[in-house]
Amino acid sequence: MTVGAGIGTAPKGGRVTAIDSRRADPDRVLGRLHAEAIAALAADLIRAESENPGGTEVEAVRVLADALRVIGAEVTLDYVDTNRPNLVARLGARRDSGHLRSPREGDAGILFLGHSDVVPAGEGWTGDPYEPRREGDLLIGRGATDMKGGLAAVVAAMAAVHAEAPELPMTLVCTVDEEVDARGSLHYIRHFAPASYTACIVAEPTGLATITACRGASNLRVSVSGASAHAGNPADGVSAILAAADLIAEVEADDARLAQAPHPVLGAACWNVGTIEGGHGTSIVPDRCVLSIDRRTLPGEEPGRILADLLERARERIARRARPGAERIRLDGEVEMTMPGFCTDPDAPLVLAACEAVCEAGGEARTGVWSAACEGGFMAEHHKVPTIVLGPGDIAGQAHQPDETVSVHELHTAARAYALLALRLGDPGRDATPD
Image 1 (tube, rainbow, N blue to C red):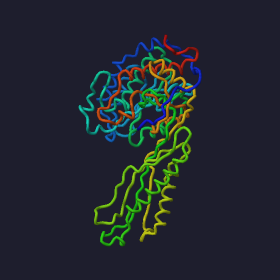
Image 2: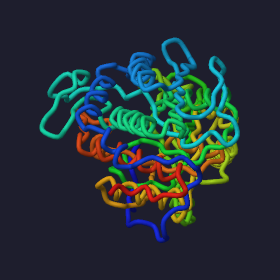
Image 3: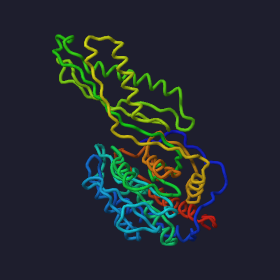
Image 4: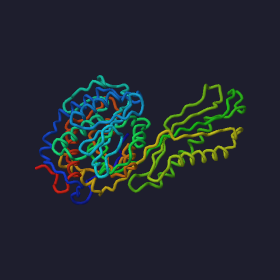
């Protein structure tokens, strides 16, 4: 994922009105947060390889679960597939052990969201990507930025807050398969009823900017079927690749149309043809071509309708071409993955509270919009909860790169910001600013 341009200044408005009655001393909470301890947990998570594809998130989830159980969290591992469990950890709220359920009405509190999988390490590393190392302030390893550093900061913040405000409700949901098909989030929303969360904080790397909106994303797969023939007699067959070129022309035309109608906050929806596979050899008319296509979506757009419209326009273009045998061309498509976007008012109380918390933690209050998609859209839609993305690390410059790094100082600042935000949202009678 890549962060979009447009990180600006803090939103307008005064201090947020918080929504609970529990109190804790912010100085005591912040005094429990130590940069090296957060870095050590992040390093343990990096060592627990959880590449996707690979289906081994369970190793990282076990590290996370152990750390959460130590601080008294109720931890549920909900298996999406073999060795691929979602984690749901709760502190503070009333709960019924042994049952997959959301907190009771009024108990839900703040929801932190992350994912346990990382993209494959790939080539170009100067050391073992799963043996984390330090270079000054930087922690290096696959997932340092995206997003094991953020998870470590969340766990540290939850521990510090819980030690001083044990009744304040907080939940961490950590999903599997975020980097490929979002199966973890889809499984979660099927198995957990909507809950009355106060806010959802996605701990993806934003450089501690508060991201208030992101577009959705859909992965589409289109199969084009033609008829094979010898290349010496191409009229005997029907080229699936030429028909696929017509479909790509329709993608390009629609992309230009979308660019003329941008959303006022999210910008324009857009297309990208990611992969093409087809043909059997240079002397054979190709009877098959398969395309994987990315479509970034705006609120109100339905991926199935988008795909159907594309196929209809492509069929019309193929018919207009009037190539011999065009009537034998067949187009089939499916939506392989869809991830909804979200759009939170930049002057909403949650955004104000987040910017204040980052400032008080030692960072700079900035807001922005992502050009990427993230799983926050699932939670915003499912729980009807105000949602932001806020986390340590540079997603554009470090995520998915060789020698991926995160600043330990920024991990500490993130944990401080998460803790202050949890206090601010959980205590109406007191300013959560440390003395």
